[in-house]
Amino acid sequence: MSEFSEYCRHLLANSGSNVYQIANHSSLDRTSIQRMIRGERLPSRKFVKDFCSYLRINPIQQEEALKLYDIEKIGKTEYLKRCYIKDLIERLSFLENDNSDTLSGSEDFSNAFSITPCVENKIFFTLQKELETNTNPEILLNVPTSYRYIFFVLKKLFSQFSGHADIKHLITLNSNPSNSLHPCQNLEIMSDVLPTIQLLKDIYHPSYLYSNITCDDEKLMVMPYYIITSQNVLIISSDFKSAVLYHSWDIVKEYRDEFYRIFQMAKPFMEYADNPICIMKALEKNYMDFGLPSHTLEFHPCLFFMNVHFNSEKDSFSELPNAAEYIDALQKMYKVVAASTPPQKNEEHGFFLFRRGTKYVLSNRKMFWTV
Image (cartoon, rainbow, N blue to C red; front, side, top):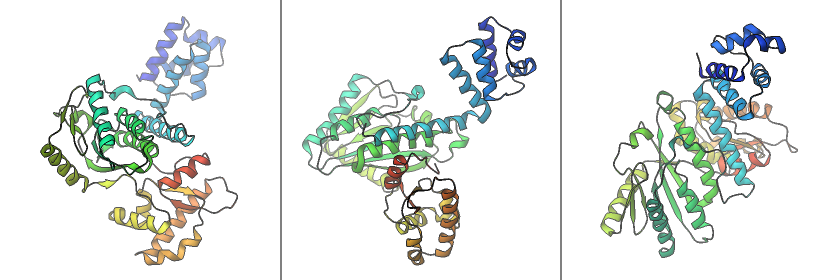
């Protein structure tokens, strides 16, 4: 018996009604109701809504029933992926409307941190001191993306900052999330990082490495997270309940050197380009190990659709290796995306990476084509 069928049985029992009464006083079939609450058959979504309507349950209970129905129908992992994607789009749309003081979207508190005031004070002190004492502040982060407090602090501190600043964030992605206990780990990270890039604009530069270490593994480590500035190193425990602040230049130098050693092996989470040639070169550099250009394009997660004429750039592809295959792959993708997109006034389209593509997607109320 599934969670959905068990919940429907619970709703029925608490209503004071029974299967026969529902069948006699509604259009719902008695056998279908019985199979639903026994977990023998999954009905249509409309059937579930009618079932909830007859029982006169409150909207919260109906929402829970429909949620469990969706999980039963498509699987929990797929359901969570869709929730993360929906949350990501809503948060980006929120930022696009200039509501940038906060991060919007539903929060998943299953992995939430219970921060002690002492740790919060040390984090704020470390970041604030870097801005006050350094004309070109540099902040090196190794903290989980789900710890959103630090992004709120950075946004507040840098809201009036007009100089040059650099925030480097080292992020670990799961190399095989589908076979782990957290199959949506990478998607959850993306849903945190992409809005943060929009929020902190040109000063936030995340890079990633792949690893099989999960968030559960990190909970068993001693002080796994840290924040490094030009003057301080703040070492933070896995539960964010304790932190140690170092001022020694020797310690700061050791941590900075080690951070950069690892950071140089990482890849940028976001690369920017303003024409198809730059995009193709980036794809070739990072993804040609997957095989042909058609597979390279298929694997890349951040291609977006916008109003730049594709044909005007075709001749420039000749400078690339496998140019003919790239053009063929782009033309095939162009046809697929164009066929699923409402026609624009100028009917000119092309492919670009995130920064410009996102603005166009949001302004035209489109969704991401690949995630």
